[in-house]
Image 1: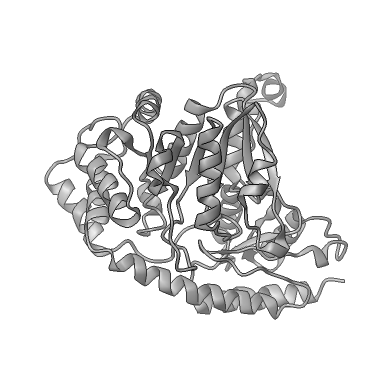
Image 2 (image 1 turned 120 degrees about the vertical axis):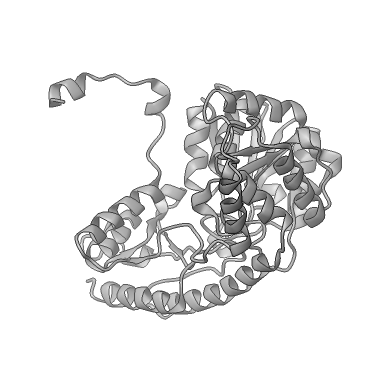
Length: 399
């Protein structure tokens, strides 16, 4: 296609409201370098370094041999929806029914569908900063307006009920919560989560709680807003098997919420992705209903890796970093390097680290802050050491 023809193309307003995923852009650029034979230390990818547990893989293989390869009901099989409900009830004392659960092609699909169902043009959505890269763009795609809640790095990026309350207006439709947080690893207290949910219920506002990392909580106080049964008519819980069971490529997420909301999400899903892959649904049943020791094993190792990477980051002159309380990311502040070596932004820091030091990180601009980069520590200590040393040498050479 010629340049003139490309310039003549006119796309819809809704697609022009959003940007490509920052994290996916980093993954793509790192892959280009690898294709050139360059050794890249990857701190960018937001996925576990563990293999999917064997019993989950076995369930998928069994499903293939049993020819479980046809379409299923759009929101997932009854078996899977019951497994989602049961797992959540056992772990968080929630009280959902099958009609209040939907399985989706990854947690992002569940998020997208929920936002499209709940947010209309001109609706305000309260979104804490830093935020996961997709939240803002999915809200904007729906025509909503993000009201950004600025958190304090000195307070570990924590979100409190008082902070949320100050931003509520007559146009507030949804409050997005993400605890533990991607990218900061911040964890909201059960008290604040409860207070926000109570306030939202009183004001007829929806709470959209992304609990993708709920099992990777290092405070010893694992909590889901889905356990707040008295407020469930205004809560939608988003979950994923990706991080909990090291199943990122399998693409299986879910939502729990009022039956009317789940039905609307299913209607939208019926016209887009339809059902999640049938084979993956069988694997998900095995994950949710099978032995859970693998979840705790991975959680304990992440704690060790977190401590290791934060210690290593603190040894790099100029870098500061809060201690993440969950997920598997560190969010170091690199503002000390702005103005050195032609660097003007966190994007410049991340770009130079990738192209010159061959360490992949994600710039903070994609998460709503300009002074940070995200470092995934979901890798081995040896790989962390290699990447940290490259970062130390490169940043020390800036003048």
